[in-house]
Image (cartoon, rainbow, N blue to C red; front, side, top):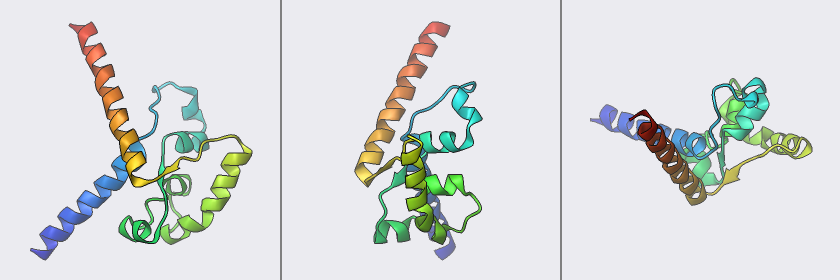
Length: 128
């Protein structure tokens, strides 16, 4: 029973993190020029959740998703340490650094789902 509950809880939390961090950002076409720039792609397609003691503990450091994507092999406990450097890099290069509170990020995610649904509806109507 412990294994089942821990796996369900862990899976839910991981899905929660991925949904918040990835689905609340703009989407790009498969041939978009941004795909040629690794750093820009990570910064435009990933969002951090505002850090805090509880959020850092609950999400295990994956609330620093931008840093995680830029430095995928870096241990999670170091992601918070490089956050100021990444923010500075973004400011100096006029790149976005998206970090929001819980409810703002989820609101943006819901908006993106609505955008995708609207686009899918348009495409489906054209095909019929």
